[in-house]
Image (cartoon, rainbow, N blue to C red; front, side, top):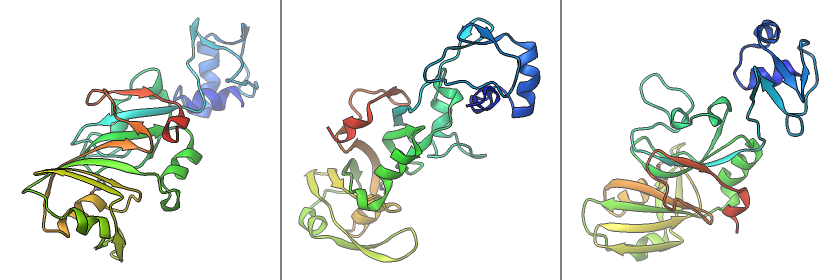
Length: 229
Ligand code: URA
C-alpha cells in the first residue's frame, strides 16, 4: 500500500495533505525516512514511525463492545452518541463495521471489526448465528411454547414472517431468549406478539462469544474463531 493511503486511512490527513505531512513530520518505514507519497509500505510487516512514535497497525481487528443504552449503532449521528465514539486510542484511527446492530435503547454485546467480509458473514440471515438476549418484560411471561412454535411478525420491510425462538427460559418478568435471525426489532416484536412489552433488552451472546465480564461502555479484542469455538 502507498504510504499516503496508509496514513490517510489512519486519519492523519487527506491524500493531498499527506504530501505536506511527510515534509513536516519525520515518517520512517523500518528506519528509512520517507518523503514520497507513493512510497510502498507493507504495514503488516514493516514498522512505521511518526516523529519517533510507532504507528499502531493491525488487520483485521475484531472488538467486542458492551454497548450502553442511549448509544446509536452507527458511526456518526447528529442527535445521539454513537458506539464508535466509545473507541479510544489506538483503535480510534480505524473505520469499523458494526456486525449486528442493537436498538438505541438496547444494550449488550456488539461486534466492531475492520474485516467487512466477517461482519457480512455473521449478520447475513442464512448464516444463522444464534444470539442470546436477556429481556425484562412489563409482566410475567407465560408464553414459552408460543415463541418456540413461532409467531407471525413484521420485518423491517413490513413483510410478515414466522419468527421462532430456538431456546427460551423465563423467570417471571425476566426471560432469556435465543434466536438465529436479526430482523428489525425482532425480539421486541416477538414479545409484543404475545402481549408483552419489552422494558429492557440486553444481548449477552453472539455464537459462542459472550459479553462476559466486560463493563458497560468498554471493549476488548477477540479472535474471530471465538464465535464458532
Ligand atoms: N431485537 C430487538 O428488538 N432489538 C434489538 O436491538 C435486537 C434484537
